[in-house]
Amino acid sequence: MGGMEGSVITVRVRLFAALKDKLGRSEVPITVPEPARASDLVAAVAATHPELAPLLPGVRVAVDLGFVRPDHRIETGHDIALLPPVSGG
Image 1 (cartoon, rainbow, N blue to C red):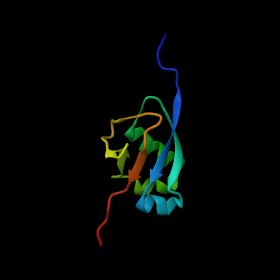
Image 2 (cartoon, rainbow, N blue to C red; image 1 turned 60 degrees about the vertical axis):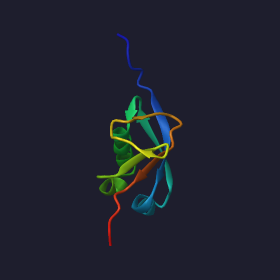
Image 3 (cartoon, rainbow, N blue to C red; image 1 turned 180 degrees about the horizontal axis):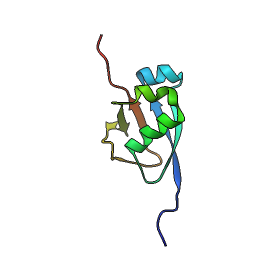
Image 4 (cartoon, helix red, strand yellow; image 1 turned 135 degrees about the vertical axis):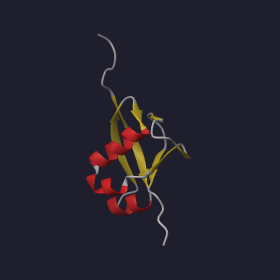
């Protein structure tokens, strides 16, 4: 059998607004298995930092300064940011 080797990548994820406030940090390292999609990254953030999980539904993922879809491929070296939905008030 050939195929996947089960490799992983670690990326730095920048946090904004309520995510940053809740965790007290503006950046976290997150490890995900390859190939990773934006939705996998969000799930890994929730698993690694459960205190952020309630804030993650509806979060927007930006890669290299542009918002991406949940199926966007995440790779080493990407500039990744999570932005929670903006609430009015």
